[in-house]
Picture 1 (cartoon, rainbow, N blue to C red):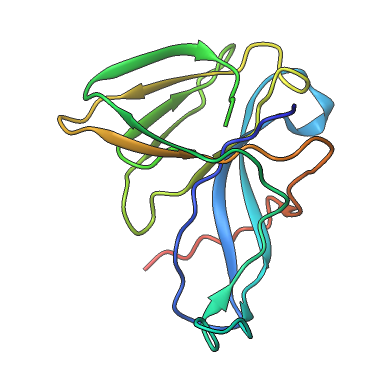
Picture 2: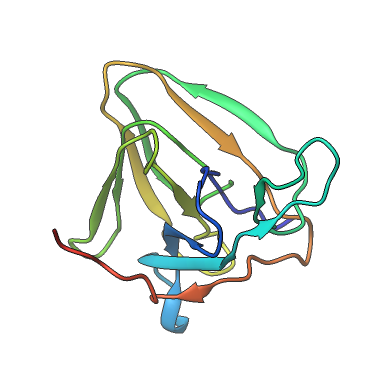
Length: 157
C-alpha cells in the first residue's frame, strides 16, 4: 500500500482553495522536496447535517490513525508513512531546505515523499514542550492526491 501523510484544516470562506506545505519529490528527482500544493476549491455540502458547510474531497483514504508524539521527539530520517500537527521541524537530506510548521489554524502539512518517489525521505523533529498530534491518513492502493504544484501565492502585509 502506498502511504501518504495528510493534515486537514478548516476554512470559512466559499470559493477558496486549500494551500498546504507538502514534502514531495518533484521534478522526477529521487529526493524529497518542499512544495506548495493547492487543492481544488471548497464546495458547498448537500449532505444532511452539514448542508451549507464547506467540503473538500482529499482523495480515497484508508486506515486512518490518530497519533500522539511525545515532546522533543526526534523522529530521525524516514520516508513518510502518512500527517502531523503541532510544532514540527522538517529537514531535507542533501541540502539546506527546512520548514518549521506550527500547529493550529495554519499548521497543515502533507508528507508524500514515500519510498517509491524519494530515496532518502526527510527528518522530522518535534521540539515543542507539549505533545504533538498527528492524523495519519493513508491513501488506498492506486489512489493519489489531486493538486496543482507550486501555485501558492505569498502575500506580504
